[in-house]
Structures are given as structure tokens and as C-alpha cells.
Amino acid sequence: MATIPALPSSDKGVNLGYPAVFVTLLVWVGFFISLRAGAKSVLTIADIAQIRFTLPAIFFSYIVFKQRKKIIQVPKRYLIGIICGSGLPFFYLGATGMQYAPVAHGSTLIPGTLPLFVTGIAVLVFKEPLSRSRKLGLSAIGVGILILLSSALMSFDIQLFKGHLYFLSASLLWAIFTISMRMSGLNAFEGAGVSAFGSLLLLGPYLLLSGDQFHFHIAPANELLFQFIVQGVCVGLIAGFSYGFAISRLGAEMTAAFGSFTPVLAGLVAIPVFGEWLNLSSIFGMLFITLGTLLASEVFRKTDNNKNVIG
Image (cartoon, rainbow, N blue to C red; front, top):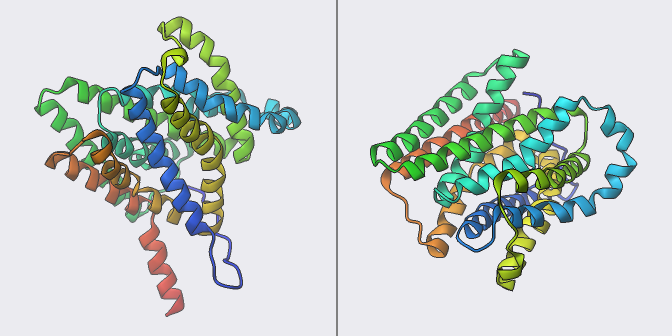
């Protein structure tokens, strides 16, 4: 896969990519915690989706309007991929999965299996080669997926298995979004605007087809405020910038490596917040997927190469 080269750090040796990736990591953890909290509250998927996409649509409206000619010229399949892969369809799958499975499983399967789907698309569609490190990483991710799925089936927990399938479907959409953004030529802000506006347009048909309803009027104020801060501000506005900035300063491999720790942090937070303790099979599945994500990012290979150059 093509990667974005890391920019050099400042003359004082301070690389702002590290605080940026740390902020991104916290936002990702908050994203999964908020979805689980929403699944346990009176708020509906429509409520949280409205919160998630309205503020970014307003914030990026000027950019979308200014770049409307550029956006219109993007092939429709890539625009659809951006909207579906990061917008309402992706959000629906992730939020629905959280109704059946714990935070640690969602935060493991959605970002953790992303390299598997992205690489699969790259190899099948764009005929890109695979390094040994990436093959090992993808194999470990596959083993982790099998452990989680088989543990749900062996325990006859069909609800948990359904949650896993929703998470894997969400990850596939996110992979489509990743490829679509790469091919579209849009920058992060333009892509975020397209995703937000497209999602708001899809919200009406979603309400008609699903029968979902808004429950803003009966939701506690503290729940609404929490979702607004996490989904609207942090996920909708901050994450896109901090993630892109981290990639520009650290490189895509190092940023992906840091991102692999999302399930660990999210799982730890979910223990005191939701009382979601993990069994042994879940822990092993998470470990394989996390390790696979690290290997697939090729950060170790990059470090070895750097050592060879220095030596």
C-alpha cells in the first residue's frame, strides 16, 4: 500500500506526531465507549447519528461549498465508498454490533481487522504485492478472528456472534472508505464533509426503512452532552485532523502501530464503566489481532531498516 512519508521533527527534537496520535487513540477509545453507552441508554441509533454528523456537516460546509466542483468530478463510486465506509452505514453497523457484544470485541474487530480487508482489496483489485511481515500479520489477524467467532459459537452465544458479524461488516466498509479516499484525491477535510452531508441525506431513508425514532426528548441531559462531546466534537472534528497530522509526522506504519492498542485501552475502560470482564478466549483473540495489526503495519521492519542504516 502507498504510505505517507513522515515529516522530520522540529529542530528542538520535539515530534508533535506523538501527542497527536495519543489524542487520536483516546478519541477512538471514546468512540467505542460512547457506542456501548448509547446501546445501553434510551438513545437510539438515529439520535446518536444525528449528533455524530450534524456538527461536522456545519463545520465543513464552507469547505464542501468551496470545493464543490472538485467533489463533483470525483467518480461516484468513490463518493459512495466514502459515505458508506465512514458515514451512516458504517456507524449503523458499529452501533448495532455494540448492542450484542462488549466494547473490547468491537474495538478489536473493527480497527484490528482493517488491515486484512484493505490488503485484500489492494491485492485483488490493484494487484499489490505482500511482504513477509504483512503476511504474518494478516495470518495472526485471521487466527484472532477465528478464535473470537468460534468462542461465540462454541458457547452457543448467537447474540455475541451477531455482534461479531456486525463489527466485521463495519470494518469491511471502513476498508472501502480507506481505498475510496486514497483514489478520490480528496483531502481529509473534504472527505469528512462529504461523509457528513451524505450521512444526513441518508438519515431520512434510514428512519423510513428501519422504523427507528428520535428519543432526544426523553434522554437525560448528561447522556446527550456526553454523546455530543465524544461523537460530535471529538470523533466528528478532532479525530480527522489529529489522525492525519500523526500520519504526516510519524508515518502511516507507526500511526497504525499505535492504533493497535485501541482495544487494550477500550477493554480496560469498559471494565469499571460497564463491568465487562473478558474470558480467556476473548483475551487470546484480542492478542492475536493486536499482534497481527502491529506486524501488518510493518513498523518492526521499518525500525530494523533504520537500525541498519544507522549502523
